[in-house]
Amino acid sequence: MTHVPPRHIYVHVPFCRRRCSYCDFAIAVRHDVPVQQFVDTLAREIARRHPDAVAHDVDTVYLGGGTPSLLGGDGVARLVDRLRERFRFGTGAEVTLEANPDDVSRESAAAWRAAGVNRLSIGAQSFAHRALAWMHRTHDSSQIERAVSAARSAGIDNLSLDLIFALPASLERDWRNDLRRVLTLEPTHLSLYGLTVEPATPLARWRDRREVHEATDDVYEREFLLAHDTLASNGFEHYEVSNYARPGRRARHNSSYWRHVAYDGYGPSAHSFDTQERRWNVREFADWSRRVTEGGDPAGGTEVLTEESLETERIYLGLRTNDGVELDPSTLATDGEMLDRWASMGWALRDGNRIRLTPLGWLRLDALATDLTALSSHS
Ligand code: SF4
Image 1: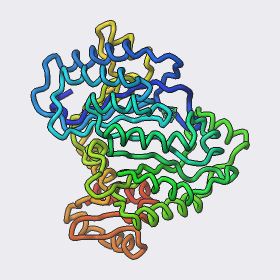
Image 2 (image 1 turned 120 degrees about the horizontal axis):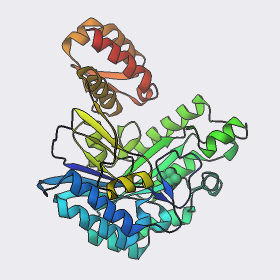
Image 3 (image 1 turned 60 degrees about the vertical axis):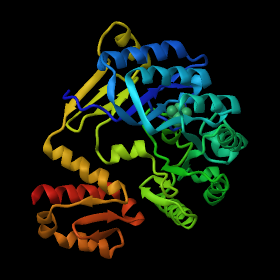
């Protein structure tokens, strides 16, 4: 692929202790994590794709998964050391580690901080015991609180927590209470995802056997809007459909995806994008590891984006954020009527040539992005 040097680095660490009931990510369930094998293989992949050290400063590094915190304090330090052999971390680089609450101790957090990690994204998901057990999570609510306190005591104060909403009614989960609990922990950032049923997950099997019923659209909408109102009134900016930040604490790494800039991804299933082409690695850990160890390319595929598909992505990604999307004046002239209707329905705000979706608009994101894409391709 045409090479644009990356300023944003993603590493996919595929290991998990068990599969969560809703998860279809590329993971490898391991009781004993092969830390050294993974770190060595990752270093080989990077060396193959970047034979020379990258001379410019990298702005963000994101260790995601899977469960990268399963590498432990020492394993993450070894991984970051290998990254620093090829990439120069800029002053103030954002270095994020995804962590499950049960992996965050004072010792592990101190080792991560010493290695350069300055942001944790903690997979809390809920504070309700029944919901956590149903999701097959490996932690309980007290471990979320302990994880936050351990991270802070180690000097990591940029803390994001994930929660899942729109759970099945049969769980009797109290969403308002979970929002209240998470606010008492004073995170800098929150990511809230509506539960979706992905094929070939335990959840899909439960649904197909009618053992569980998905939340209705009404519940989804009510909980999405309750979160928006609650968090906005507590000083959070709803800056992307699923993400909220305290002032100045937006996720810089994820924002690079929404801004459509270049990033490099390493590890099984990781994607890379150089503003023209996308490539993705093979999904399975064993396959990725074998290919890299044999000196091959772990790419599972590449795609050159046409002008049209780049424009479609630009519109979709822009509409996801509260920055919105700048439209061509001819698009606006062709069918300003549709955009006026969106505004009158409370779905969008128009500011010159820029369109921004409101929370009500985000509830219809896919449909509105499709309509807008069709509009701009005909103008
Ligand atoms: S911990 Fe995360 S990646 Fe692992 S199974 Fe659960 S949701 Fe999936």
